[in-house]
Image (cartoon, rainbow, N blue to C red; front, side):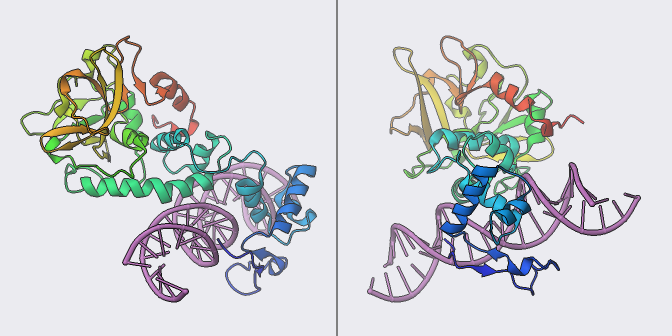
Length: 328
DNA sequence: AAGCGCATCAACCGCCAATAA
DNA sequence: TTTATTGGCGGTTGATGCGCT
């Protein structure tokens, strides 16, 4: 990382805003001594005006810098270390809903900071998205938006989720790329990318080599029949959702199958010309398939689930986001 | 061992909105 | 009402570590 070498904001240059104090302010990495000063002050006095914090703690830093240091590094409730798969799931999930609203995402991940999440997204997840989108760029439907953009389309999401006219295009499986990369260990990413909208009613079938659409609506099927995918593995493919702009979703998929004993089993699959393979190198037979993507319906008819989230819970959660009011 | 390129991530920058003076 | 200050946010930078050649 950056050297903790004490750099001082010079009296010249863009950082000087005619503030007489600014020519004494340090920049760059924080030293352990500075950390200790800030930590001690914050624990003793709590948060106040950040410029006061900087001054009273004896730090030659601007308040903004102190705030950032505290929030991103010194705060006692920060969680350290790598993101867990569950956290990764949440980040991907919430990003699909919230976009680059890192602070909003961070607010839903206790102990994580917006900066941390942003870095994680930009370094790790975005890279994976790029890899996947490079596969799909040549196969994207003409109206698909630039998949390299990490801006989600919340409006489309909620329009669709509300039954207001979203749609899915499902392209022929022959256009699906092959993903054999063992480094792609997070199936959660794949899952989320594939099918953010599981509410596919009848009609999501691959038809004679031509893309066909599957309607997304507010009516979620309660039985396996409503998935529209059983005995029809060819229905999997790129998913294109959109009203004004489209979200192009790469086609690596996870599928839920039932074994001979009717036990539910979820696997990630990829398509290789003639066969679909699971991540355990088994050829998946379509006849037992009862769901796609993150979504499946179990034999007990317990409702549609999305990864770890119950759909209703998710929407309940989402509905509490005041900034996601796209109805107006 | 050295050089290179890439990944990571702490910290800065600039903008904006809220609040105070 | 205007101006200054502050806090918050997302985007970006750049130092460092690490793996590969």
